[in-house]
Length: 415
Image 1 (tube, one colour):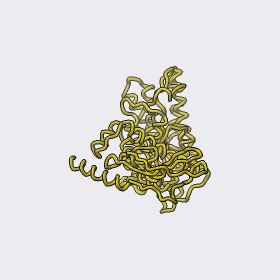
Image 2: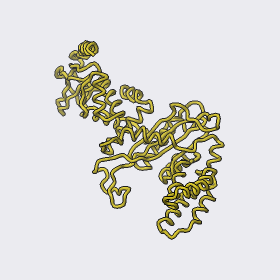
Image 3: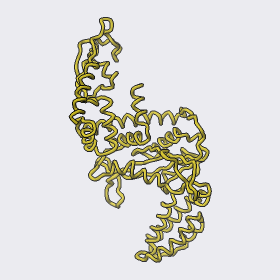
Image 4: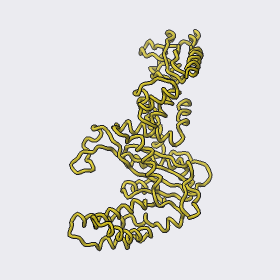
């Protein structure tokens, strides 16, 4: 650690020399101002910046416009340190740590691993600023996509491309739930739904014929937004992953109406599959209501009805549910709703056909994504987020997990 500290000091001293700008030549002392006039060189001014090797004092030219009195430091824009006291390298570290763990843990790790002292607020501010910039760039891409101004992604045909989507609650501060009803009748909401989508490919199946996801092929998108806005976001991701080149296109989800609305709107023609395990849960919930405190009866009822479900005999399943007689108005309504659920989704429950095609019938990839992408970062004890904060950090997190973080910084430098 002592050697590292000494090397950092030496590096900081050398970097300070490299970043000591000279006064501009006499014929280069005027630059354009945003007001349309010319800003004139005034003097060299210094600024302390935290870099990967420690604090460095930078000396650079200062220009002032005599007409609008707006001052500017062209070197700050060139070095990407405008309106910040951290170098791009440090902000990169703060962003990576901020998307991965609570902001204070990020501060501690930065001190341990890089020997840099920053505040918890600095990690939070950087993660949200970088995430917001990533989200803004994505939104610009989404708008181009909606204008059908997307480049054709050239490449080899993709055997099977999957799109899955789901929603999961994120704890938010009170002002974000004003006027929103909670899950319990009469209680206010404490969470907002973050919608998450994933795209992945499949080129093979195992010896038993079960689908096998291609390693490292999963990418994610997510945000707290309307279903329509999210549909556009997921469509862009699927397009970038080669949707137009996919030989088989599959959309998967649970029984939420918004999912299938977006599937029909943005992924027409794709095969739709409802998660088998979610459908089974509907049956188990019914079994527990039909035979409370009688596990044996529940299991017998489930054996028959799950057999029909797994074998795609949805018509027989619906008929059975509709034939059940009960004096309970609540249970009768439940039976009616569940029968409609299975009838409405019958074509998405052709599981024998899907298995013959060696396709997935469960959304395990999406369920894991809700836990690892959203749950592990946004649902830790004591966390309460603003919608703006969630969307910024979630955009950053997806960008990092998708392996596009360095591409983002390259784009910043090229801009």
